[in-house]
Picture 1 (cartoon, helix red, strand yellow):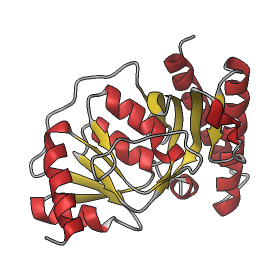
Picture 2 (cartoon, rainbow, N blue to C red; picture 1 turned 135 degrees about the horizontal axis):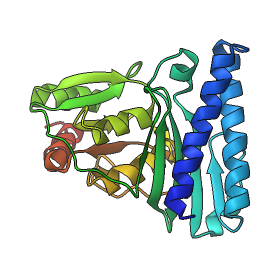
Picture 3 (cartoon, rainbow, N blue to C red; picture 1 turned 90 degrees about the vertical axis):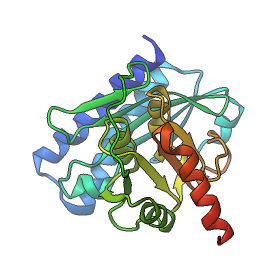
Picture 4 (tube, helix red, strand yellow; picture 1 turned 180 degrees about the vertical axis):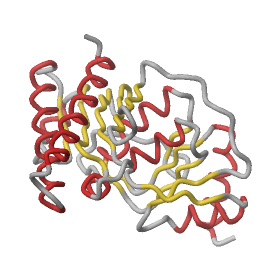
Length: 248
């Protein structure tokens, strides 16, 4: 099985496990979030270690093993991205399974189990991008929209679209539901690695908000910011962010 096929199968399977657990109604609130994270993480980690025993592994839900830093191939996973949305019975949560090679988000699958019938977007099966809206739509956090995104959207006359998990927001750009996901509130590698791998395969622009590349499998997993957008908007967004940072 190829790495991409494995990522897609595991993302779909972990999503199904989380959905089934939620449907049983045995947990609610934080207990549901914890149980869903734990069950999905156990499934993913066991499967990756069995299928790719020589690769490294980084999961949000496991203590970091820095042995991964000596590996060229490292799987980076987020068993339930958007636990709040998962616990609130919303659809905007995701499962992330990615493989980074030499620090690059190379292979990925993002499952959106809350959508009708479940959806898995994968880096080995990109589809043509749909038509863009103009002015553009900006994906922002439901609870803490990035100041830069709000400022750039105002400059472009764009619409803010609040949404839950990072994966759901990134895949909304892939799916043609928005044009720009500009985030500056801080994330970790597992929040973006799989979405970036998928977005790159679809031909989207992915970078830091200063235009520098996104690098994965670092000792410090914190990533301050992220831009995923239609390539037609990338230069204008990066220029606008640069002006804001200079105070122009």
